[in-house]
Length: 432
Image (cartoon, rainbow, N blue to C red; front, side, top):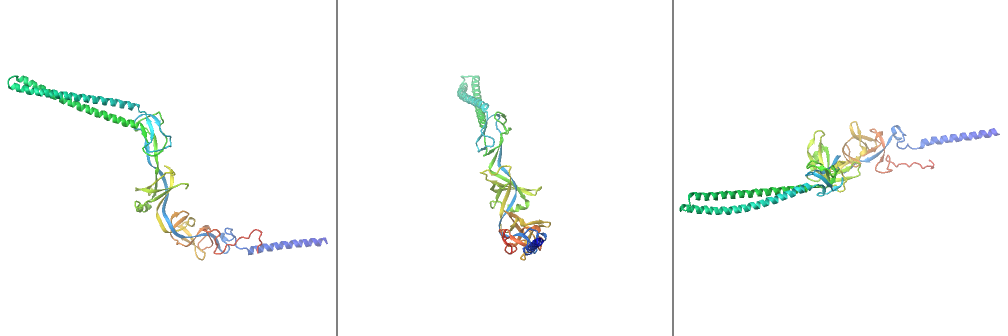
């Protein structure tokens, strides 16, 4: 009896195993194709030959025509401060790195030696003016004496004719009058000499006053100071010693180069309207807008580029001299540009191409010519029409003529393969 009971238990276990095996086989036959990328078909295809991809529509919209290159920020003006007089540097009115305004005092040089020279020149001027007054008085006296001697010579000549005076006395009176006339001429020359001396002394005084003005050095422009090259207490030499460099940082220049093939686009717009230029920091955190104000007169034959320069107002000091930035020059716009996502364009041995999805959901590989970038999109110059569907993701598993199960990349949970996407059964829900 016990043996019979054990045989019945083994038979029940065997029947349970066969039942589970039957259910497992039924599951494989009734389930749909594997999920995308699950490797359910050959080459990653879904069952039925469809390759799961993401698609997007080629659209026509207005796209700005822009050139983007790397540029360099430059100070709009740079001045190296040097003294115009020699002497001891006694004061510095700023700290290194300070922003200074035009006309603000920067340095002071010892002026005592120049003050002494000025006092001496002023004393010499007073002496020359006194000598001039003395010479003028002498001239007046000499002229009076000359007038007396001329009258006397005239009387002697009349009396000599009457025989009262001899001819020798008459000649002596005339000679005396002539000598006095020469003395007057000499006194007049002395006056001219003192006048010239006065003018020279005044010129010396003016020169010393100018030099005294140079003992206080003022900023010729508004900008930021650099490193102080000479410390207070050192002796500086006129027009030789470099004291500090000042860079004007508002406005600023941004210099950059573009290919010579783009020169016609710039030249056709320059001067007719403002050409906006955007400077963007390398990390994209800051940007500024300026205006193109210059392009060079020569193409660099070694690089095939031409240099351009834009002016930027920089009140917030976002840009800094010497900084490298991405420069975007806007030369207009294309009102009907065909654009697709950047990742839709692939590069092959024959150039750039796109997979285009036809109405039967088969793909065609089409060679295209690209234009400028616009954000995350790329302009297609030739090879594509607006409204066509292109593959934006999943190109690595495609070949021309393959059938795709498409998902719209612009919508989450979009349609797939033209039908509704089936939801996966929730955990614990029985399968039919």
